[in-house]
Image (cartoon, rainbow, N blue to C red; front, side, top):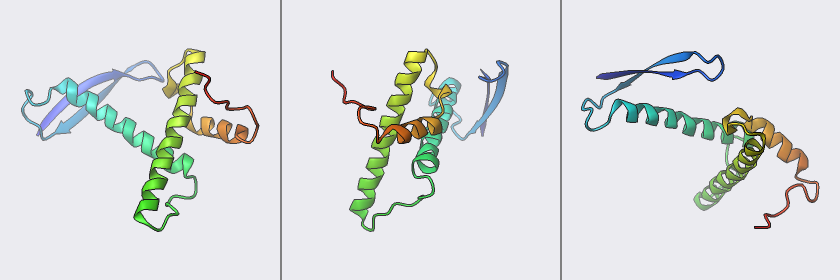
Length: 128
């Protein structure tokens, strides 16, 4: 077992937060401590992404409605596409406000989109 200890700044209070990562990859030549720390945090980004789809987009409907494997695949890809579109709205808003997109609530973005989706012209097609 290999233990990797590192510090990252805490976004909310500005102090460094201590992390300990335990791995079975013993050879630092196979995976450096820095690489493993980066991958660990990317893993949590993916977990957060999946949680956003499950808890915000699907809301109370936590299961796919389709009864066939092809239908489930189609629903899954549709949810990924909706999440991508929502994140584009978030990223564009963050760019305009000069903020990190992680500082904008996914749940609030979905609420705004849902409240505006029936208003013609709220989301015009991209003219580019």
